[in-house]
Image (tube, rainbow, N blue to C red):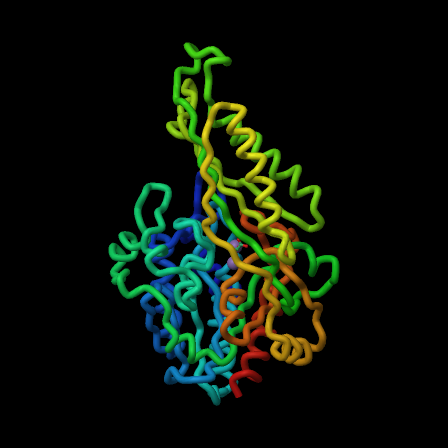
Length: 398
Ligand code: HGY
Ligand code: MN
Ligand code: MN
């Protein structure tokens, strides 16, 4: 089945009627449905499927072994996300295996298709949670204690889904099997539109992190409390949002985003007692921390002036990543010299790049938009991406 056909098969899983797009979060029903779908499709291709202690699914073509060629991506989404971010890499990998089988190809090396868990951090707040656990780049106890918006911990959710959370953590044996990792992903930006090419090779991923700001004031009545008698945490929160934009704008290529802001208790006629907001900050090179420090200073100043307190917690951080040079060159040569693109989006391939030779292929997205229902890839480009992946996998797995 073509990559587009496989995408269509899951086109109705996890649709979010309120936000639009898809909400497919770790261990929730839609994601469980996608896991089952992937398992069935992989088994149908004669792959042996097993899920590791961190919730990552591995579909092996032949026996697991060292120097394995591994490809894949993720199936979870951001809230209200697009149809391609994650699934495109998974369906293209399945389609590549089917095409290689039809060509009578048999891998000369161990070969696996992998689906990483909780890449978006859409439920537990830390992106690439499955690949961070696999590689030991997150403390397993910290991971077990991560809570979703309802206060459910990762450990509780994992246990409810049949995993033993006490086993989550670094898996050096499995990681050690990977000889090369290659992730195909829809482009999240306009690079390929302007370059007129359907496919690109990934070059770098910029540093990025997430910080939680918790503002505490005095909850009170919206009508009975004079302005001068208030300690309203919404004010320093709002000032932090605008400060983040002002400060990021003053720095080359810096990005600072507040996409999530939660007042408690959240009543229309209630002055909030606390307001939590999450800052996503990204700067190429080592400028992220300095950017965040300035935003934190602005937040503290605003909190003081409004008679509120603020607590800032770093929830995740990944430094700049440059993909494996030799792999990047091979991909470029084998694909006839497509463009090379940097990205501001994080990926499991970037986590793995710290441990194994890893690379990425991007597929043109004519809207350039991602993390939104408007994310898109034309069927022709989806097939061009799947064909490119098939060709390079055949060479890597000879
Ligand atoms: O946030 C990111 O960059 C990725 O989509 N997880
Ligand atoms: Mn994403
Ligand atoms: Mn992604």
